[in-house]
Image 1: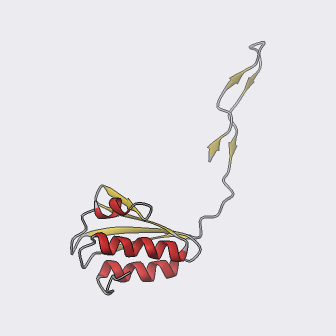
Image 2: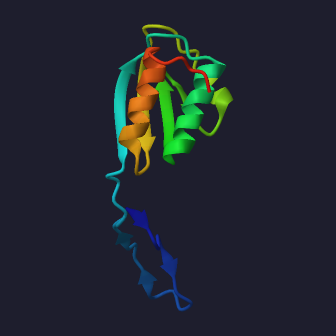
Length: 117
């Protein structure tokens, strides 16, 4: 919920406007999250492949590893996650083709793909 008007006093100071809450009408059914375990190292090549998958599927992906967060908007943020084999990840995908993006991204994270762009 967003707050439209928190508090406002009128010119004569006797009338006050109270907060009004507006519900968000936007549906979030095109957002999914998954918990995965990495089976390989995610370096520059794998990060570039994740970015390409996000662009092809018109989705936004974010990966959380520990206290760090990486997004497909920045290759350095993905590489900075220092993902090694056995590390737990939370993959969040937003977009209409999120299922296709998940299938391809999970192949990269699990090391099943060649990672050649």
